[in-house]
Every structure is written in structure tokens, then in C-alpha cells.
Length: 288
Image (cartoon, rainbow, N blue to C red):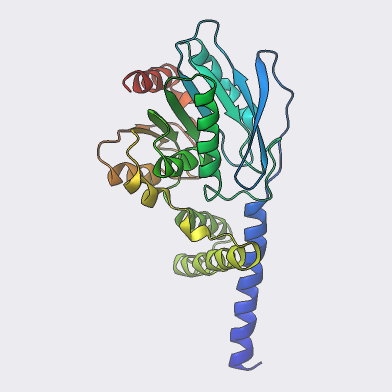
């Protein structure tokens, strides 16, 4: 086989691998759940005409403020509902959306904030129309990164809590590909090169086939244009999205505090330190 054939074959192999990686990333399994007895099913129509659905929960005695809680990748509002009692007990109304292409919400792709940041603004407008005085946001993993990007579009929230966000989509994608490659004992310098090639191919495929410019998905770049106060929370035992992501994000705006939780894994702060988590989140919202 000639050198040219080897180069072409290698390039094609990386492109196909990137295409498979891209398709798996843009399409995730959906989780559906019945509406809880204390929740109302509500919906909005996004800018691309996708119908997005959520649960709306009201407290017995309202403080007229509202919290939007966003779940992580391949999860749904059913995974977020565990946060509702801490807010309802303090008088907050709570909105639990299914992110686009998740749960019962429409949408062809998961776009990691490219479209979701605008969905959040539409939800915020809906909450304001219901009579919410101040809006707050709690995001977990992907949900946290979406909220950060939404804050750069419009300062719709008085304050945000972001747990386990990624700082840059391409950077975290390369990190996760490298982790997979280490399981087959690929040398470090080779895994770095392969990860870059696979992710570059995936980004190219998303733009070429689906017209999605995932290069724009960078919360760390977005935060430079955001004035919303953000409390970052990250577990030091998070190996899925390591704590350096939140450290990088908090470093981009020193006014935003960072709470590193020693023994918590990915989005595990509430499980590891429930009382501290509740206190810090509620105090952060009360301050703003």
C-alpha cells in the first residue's frame, strides 16, 4: 500500500469515527416519566418551532420568586425533581424542563447550548409572564453549562448555581475520548493526537451534515459577556468533568465563588454534603 493510500485511509477512518462519535453525541436516549401529583404540565414553543415541555410546581405559600432547574445529558426533569422540595419549602415556585431532544421535549438534536441557551430565555420569559418577581437557575452538568451560555445572551436570572459544568465543549470532548483510549493502554501522546483528530472530525461532521457549529459552544468564552452572579459547585472526585472546568470558569470572573466538594463525584455535592449544599444554594439566591 502506498503512502498516499495510507494517508487517505487514515483520514477516512478518523472521519468515520468522528461521524459515529458525533451522531452518538447529538442523539441520546430519552427518559419519560409520569407527571407528579403536585406538578402541572406546561410547554413553550422554541424559536425553531420545537415544543418544549416542563413540570411547574407551586409552593403552599409563595415568596413570588421562581427557580428553573436544568438536568444533565441523557437525563430528564424526572432527574431534577429531587431539588424541588428545598425550593418549595422556602416559597419558590419551581420549573423543571425537559431539555430539547430529552424526555418529552421535541428537538432533533442535543446541541450542548448552541440552541438550548435560547430555549432557556424563552422559559424565563414564560416564568415572568406567570408573575415571578425574581428568577433563579440551578443547572447540573450540561444544564449548568447551558445556563452559563444563556446568561451571556440575556441577564434573565438574578443569580445562577452551576454544578459540574464543562468550560469548553471541544476541550471536554477530547478529554473524554482520551479517557476511553487509556482503557486500551494507548500511549499518552498518541491518545492526545487521536482524541484531537476524532473530535475535529465530529465537529466538522456536525457542521457539514447538520449545520451545527459546535465550535461556538464554550461557556468559558460566554462568561466574559455575562453579568449574572454565578456560584460554581464541583466535586473533587469528578472524573467525568473534572473540577478544573469550574476552576477555569470561576477564574474567568473572580467575583463568582467556587465551592469544591472534597469527596463528591459528578453532580454529587447534594448527596455528599446535603445540608451544606442546601444552605449554600439558598443563601446564594437570598443574597441576590
